[in-house]
Length: 59
Image 1: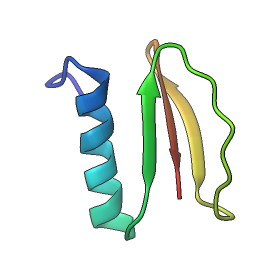
Image 2: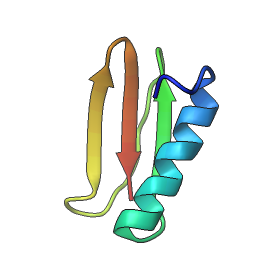
Image 3: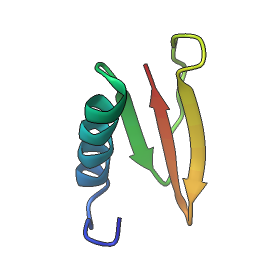
Image 4: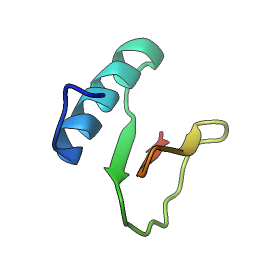
């Protein structure tokens, strides 16, 4: 992740990797401050922090 400076670029990279490794269609939100309300498939949701940046990934 050190090679990306913009959260949009991080999200794009993570989405491409998830789509490649786990099949399409994943949605990725990356940022320091956001709200969300999403519907997702069972067992296809992850939310975590890496440092001060939050990651929301779901299918």
